[in-house]
Image (cartoon, rainbow, N blue to C red; front, side, top):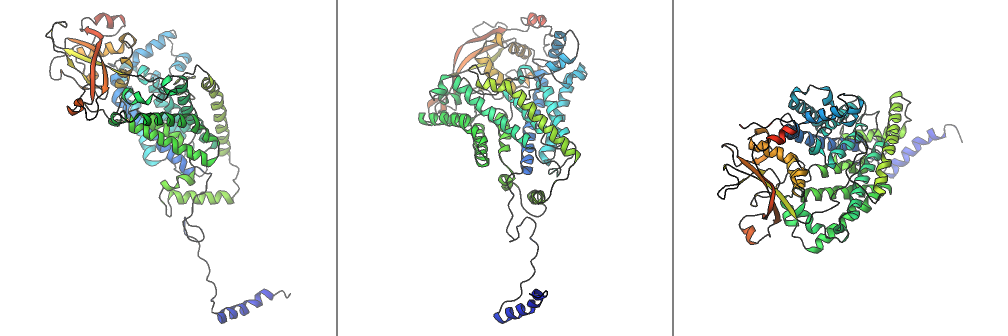
Length: 567
């Protein structure tokens, strides 16, 4: 063959094309951004998690925002200077327990920045922590940008509130938010504020930390049910749950009257979601995504059927780690310069280039490996608890609450009881003509004619504690006598926790008492419902006897607390 053979063949080929009616091919134009060479929209590849990080951060920031909003609205009344359980008194008791020193022991027992702040105005301190949390979480929620410093700030601020919140912050979702928030710190680069930090891909170790979290949450909830109340084993718990849950919503009223077979189906579905579906996490990408979809739908059903604070919203967050960029691409707009387009370019660059060795990524990989080792070490007692026949739920084994045990509704109450606080202006509490008037809380059942509230993801902490108090005694809940004292004094701070005071615009009551009632949903279409009543209630007896401000003087004096002064 001649060396110039191919070049000489070109005119002949052109002549042949003209004779056969074929023109020379035109040079191809480069594909448009976000399109493959054929010009059709390009799809993101599986296995990267740039968009996953954005969705995770926004979801976590939303929950943080709600949590700090609740804190800003309620902390002063609950743990402030004139709160029901002042955090200043709590910190002093911790300080006294450790011989009056604020050393490592006190800090590790109650980790909070309040140790370093001026205690003369604790209300301002609590507001400052809540407002800082609101500001940072709002920034992350709106922009989708975060770094380790911002996420560590959110975690530190909420840790500081939880560790002085006492019984008001004793719920499992507080520890769950702290564990989720701790993992969120390692999602981000150290300094960079960018939705797509090019040199900081999402760590697989952190993603598996989130998956390990949702695995423990769901499996722990399922096991505590099977090992706990018998009604979970005979499939009858849902016959009672909607009526007796802490704070029912309007949908619970109707779901309670569902057919018996539907309640059995609900209970079986609950066992399937909590006991079997978690293992889908370890069966490959498709099964992992099925797990994520089922868990998010399950939490959405729980949101619709009850007011469980921000718990269900928070439980959705780690489930988002089940989805990669290819799965989440539908949530983001397309087009040149869009996030999806930028991720596609980053995926193409990563497939064709060998990463250059850099000091920063090496340090970050070491930090992520250290995180994995820490999580594995702290998970040992948690796993042992899961395997134990004496499983406990919602417990922390370390003061920072990094890895915790979880569970919900291990036992289901079969009837609903409520504490109704009443006051009277009568000078004689035992007089037959004494008129007792009810105080109304913001969300818990009280007036039978009031529609159940719908507040999730918001949370009224006092209303939730009143549910626990109803199936205990007031001796187990001394804070309720503090509340009674503040009602007797007409304390405006305490009254702001309630929806209605019958003594508004009048002098405070002379006596306050607690009455115990049994509540049941009225039957839709029945006589009580026709009268506009959502509830039917019947008095059980006295929860605590009538008390006056003078009678409570000794109670407050013995605890070193000032007697509430009447207005």
